[in-house]
Image 1 (cartoon, chains in turn orange, yellow):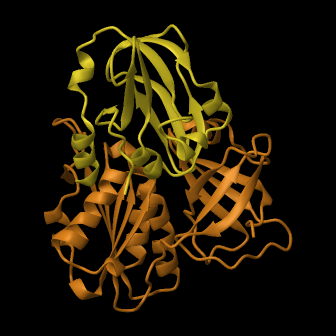
Image 2 (cartoon, one colour):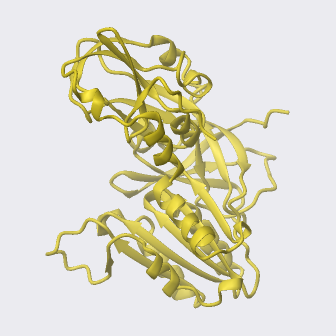
Length: 238
Length: 127
């Protein structure tokens, strides 16, 4: 049976970075779906119903009354969304699906590896864990080109203040040597991932971002460290 | 397991090239379409455009991401596949036949020899 399509109004649209926008889609009257943090929705403009794109939810399942997706300006859809989507516009929405779900158990450790806009579902993970005051440990290792490309930087740092079990760590891959950034530089590598493992059997690895980053992480976890695939969850976006 | 036809040459960036007479037909591999997932939009170059090897000249957008398509060899675009613009799903359904992107007239006959043969491309996507 085809999934139900619901038309939703854009309640607000906020630029996160010059090329990244968060769009909040208001649920229509009577719409109250059962869904999980980490899932994605598929959206389209009513004038081009055959042209659809899927975006991870950047909000969480505790957020009721709206979905939030955070979009980078790429391709035709990403450009239209970032440059033109505004409050009052309407989008077709296929409700959330997907298996990129946080294991929010008390003694679990979620080691989340993100590249670029691949960080967006992890905002939902941390938001839910923080609001529920869970003891689940969450670590985000986030690769960006420069300090200007860190999506949700302030929000993640604020969540880290509120939630002692959450750590937000950024590495920059294309900073000039003169840049005053004192944080980590270079790509995410096996050594950095291993440094952040506290209790391997209780760690679940999540990777979201470009195919190379996701494939590299999966290779490290499954092939190199020999962990079962159940401890590795991936979401590729290209 | 991806389909890698033995009669084609491949670029590291996952385009395939079929050399026939004076022309080269270009598309993306079965592996590439599988990684992209459902293709929803294709933008092709203008006929007559001269492209250099490695130059971004088309865009393919799937339900998950947008990617540039690079000219595997240098030459002049002589024909584009309008069918794939009207029905982008052809890229997924028939990556090596109905889902081709464009034909070009190579400007340097030797460039194609630098592309990957099927075995090398197979090794690349397996690794």
